[in-house]
Length: 400
Image (cartoon, rainbow, N blue to C red; front, top):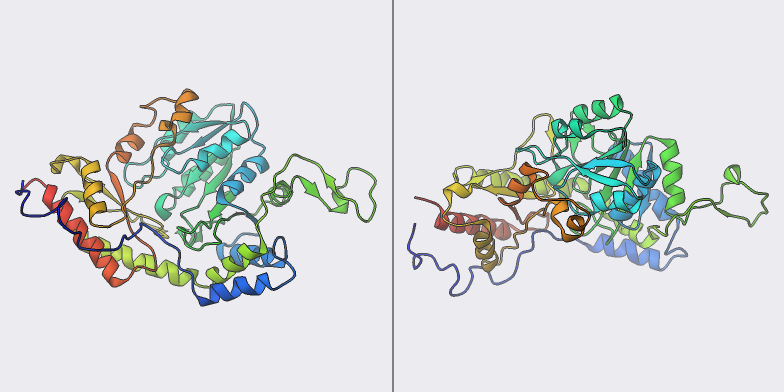
């Protein structure tokens, strides 16, 4: 190992003065103008911009319907409601995700069942799903982790065989495609997130796309307190002013302010996706000869939307563990992160009875991965700093 005085990891000034986050939104003058116009208009909550935004996303992904929500989590909750997830129902999902992918099952009284991940794509493994299916299983929630599509052919065939609903958490997947089909048109329902770190942002926000009219109508009602104004659906005698609450829904509505920002952002989605791809390719070239890390897999037949760029450390080739490398890169003002802690390892899930060892591949992967900064607003200087910093730190700790 190199002498510690050769490279100043923890002493002196970092090579960059400002902190570079792992992701960040890009708001321009057109976005500001779009929001200001709505603030000066008649509708700032639920108005016509929401439908315009929904239609734009539906056209883009190739779905018949789209329903906007106040957040991606709200959208997942609504999808579970539309799928009629209830108490004693089981839903199979991946632990390698943000907690919302699993929490939405609990919101409806269901039980999350965690399937292990593929060792290369880090997506849910179809082979791990199959033995978990029981007569209580009602749905599968997939996650297009980092923007890499799951194995849709196998999963959809499995779901069809067992009459299961597939809800795709594509919070990472806007713009990705699987064998020529855009994500958002394959699963029974697909969720997109518009949090600021995602491909486009509405501040907070989410959307479900679907080709199922029954799901579509349930989603619309659920986001509005379970209320309908549709005369054809009224259960009681109605007057012109009358509306009915027919189920227990929530106030999960998106605002016109958010939708206007989303529409303006959406006009730049292909540009944003191209920039993400360019940065990922630059990282791939820069790190291709580094023996101590594994680069993201580029799966044949799939186009990733590159929401995250994750490297995997070959710890057997390093003199240290992941935490020290994380700290060293943070010291260089590189905002590395870790995505994700397997959901069932969180204390709340441990209290529910889930135990360590449930998904060995997910747990092993978690111990070895780091997320590097990747977002369209990164400058050449930003990108070069990440490359220089990663090479510096990894080389320092590598076994000669």
